[in-house]
Amino acid sequence: MLKKAVALVISTLLLLQNSFIVYADNITLPDIGTAAASTLSIGQEMEMGDYYMRMLRADAPIINDPVLNQYINDLGKKLVSKSESVKTPFHFYIMQSDILNAFAFFGGNVVIHSKLILDTDNESQLASVMAHEIGHVTQRHLARRMEAQNRNSPYVWGATLGSLLLTLANPEAGMAAITSTMAGSTQSMISFTQSNEQEADRVGLRTLAKAGFNPYAFSEFLQKLADQTRFSSEQPEILLTHPLPNSRLTDIRNRSLQYSKKNVIPSLNYYLAKARLAIFLGKNKNTAHLLIEEYKKLNNEQSKIALVYCLALIDYRNGNYQKAKQQLQPLLDSDPDNIWYIDLMTDIDLEMNNNSIAINRLQTALKKTPNSSALQLNLANAYVKNKNYQQAISLLHRYTYSNNDDTNGWELLITAYGGVHSRAQEMTARAELIALQGQFQQSIQLLQNAKNQTRGNQTMVSRIDARIKQLQQLQKRYAAYKR
Image (tube, rainbow, N blue to C red; front, side, top):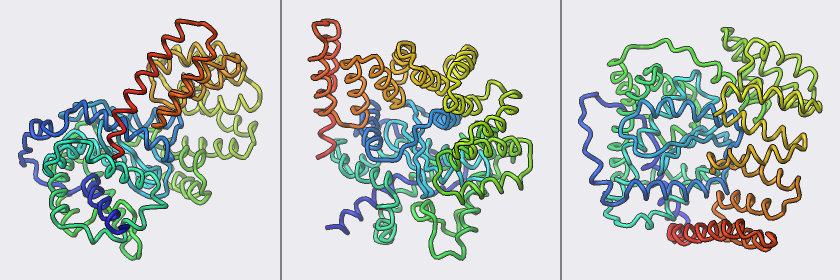
C-alpha cells in the first residue's frame, strides 16, 4: 500500500514539476481555454488554490518575514506583468527548506524553497525559475491534466494533490522515499509532462526576456547544478524531479540564442534577500559563512553594501545591538528609504527600548511609500511594543482588510486586542488566523465564544454571525477535497 501511495504522489509530482525543456519559438501552443474550462473553471482553480494554501500554512515552514515576502512578490509581479494569458491573481511564497526546489499549483500560488534562492548566482537565475512556474499556471497544466484523464469533477484530485503538497512542504521527511522510487513512474505520465514542460519553458523564457532579465539564465543555472553534481552520488532535489537528459541544455541554449544576451546587474534587494535568508532566518552557520565569502569575492558595489548588512545582521542575532546599529547606520544614512535597513534598525531600536525613534522613522517612511506591507507591519509591531494598542488596532484593521490572507497582520491584531483586554475581538482575530490554516471548525467555535463575550453589542453579533455562516459554507465546500 505504501508503494502504491508513493507512486501516486510521484505521478502527480511529475505533472506539477518542471523539466525546463526548451523548444523552438515557432511551436504553436494549442487553444487550451475551452478544453481546460470543461473540467475546471477559473473560479474553481482559485478555490482549490485557496484550500491547498490553507493546508500549507498549517503544515509547511512558510516564511512570514514581511520584507522577504514583499521582495519575492514584487519580483513575481514584475514577471507576471509581462506574462501572457494571466487569468488569476498570483501569490509568491518562500518556504524554509534545505532542499533545492520550487512548485506551483492552482490559483496562481508559487512556492520557492529558500535554498533555491541561496543557490542562484544572480537574480536572473531566480527569475527564470519563477517565470517557468508562472508558465505552468498560465497554461493551466493541472486543469488540462484533469481533462486528459476524463475526470469531470475537481474533487477527485483533492486527496492526491493535497498529499503531494504536504510532501513538498515537509521534504526532509518525505522526499527521500519518493525520489528513490522515481524510476517506477509510468512512461505515459512522463510523456504527458514533457508536453506541459514544452509550453511552460517557451512562455517562461519569453516572460523572462520581456521582463528585462537575462534569457540565458535558464541554461546557466541548470549547468551550474549539473557541474556541482557530476561526481556526486546524490543529486539535488530539483534535478531528481526535473531530470536533465543530455539534450536538455542544448535545447535551452538553442532557444536562448533567439534572444540578445543581457548583462543584467542583480538588484541590491536580491543580495539583501540572500543575506536575510542565510543569517537572519538561517540555522546553518556554514551557509552564512559561505555567503559572506561569496560577497567578498564578488567585490562589486552591491555586494559590498550587502556585506555590511550581513555583518549588522550577525551582530543583531548575537545580541550586540549597539554594534549592529553602528554597522547599519551608514547604510541607512545613505539610503533612508530602504525597507531592509529600516526593518533591521526598527528591530535594533525596539531591543534597545528606543521605541519612539523607531515609530517616528516608520511613520516618515510610510508617508513616502504608504502601500508597503513591510513598513505597515513594522509600524504595527512598533506600536504594540510601545503599548500603543489602539493605534496598532486602527492600522491593523486597514491592513487586514486589504491583506486578509497575511497571517502576520492577524497575529499582531491578536496581541493588540489582548493589550486592551478586548477578549471578544481577540478571539475573532484568532479565528481568522486559524481559518487561514484550514481549521474551520475551531475557527467557528472561537467565533461562537466571541459572540458570548459581546455583552449585547448587536452590531458585532451580526458581524460574527455573518462570518460564521461564511466559514460554514467554506467548510462544507472544502470538505469535498478531503475525500
